[in-house]
Amino acid sequence: QVRLVESGGGLVQAGGALRLSCAASGSIFSINTMGWYRRAPGKQRELVAAITRDSITNYADSVKGRFTISRDNAKNTVHLQMNSLKPEDTAVYFCNADIRSTMTFIEYDYWGQGTQVTVSS
Image (cartoon, rainbow, N blue to C red; front, side, top):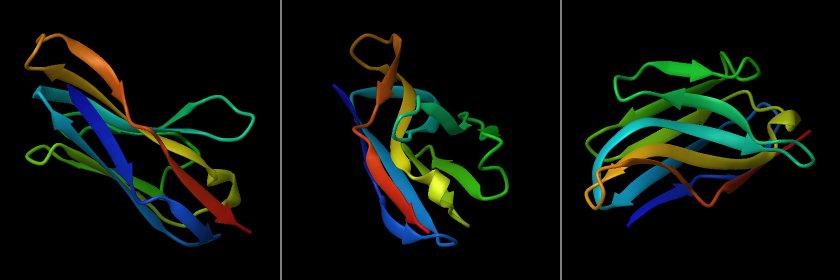
């Protein structure tokens, strides 16, 4: 069984910073792309940032220059450093990873439970 557990959300004032972390655990054979998505109230879930196993990154235009995604392959973790936060960044942030388990050796898309980020103006 594979799990993704996020941490690091919270309440911050506009202009502040937060760091989200996500740890994958369980019967993991390999992890391909990891990423962060968010869902704001009344909006659809959107990609925030993603990073491949070789550390190639991709960012939503709205966060470029403010957010940085990183990963530690040895620890099966991915992080999102969020700087210069804006009220419009308020959302539930979800960790996502493409994981091949030792049980099936088939790559599946896994999701964390989500962590709330609230940016006050």
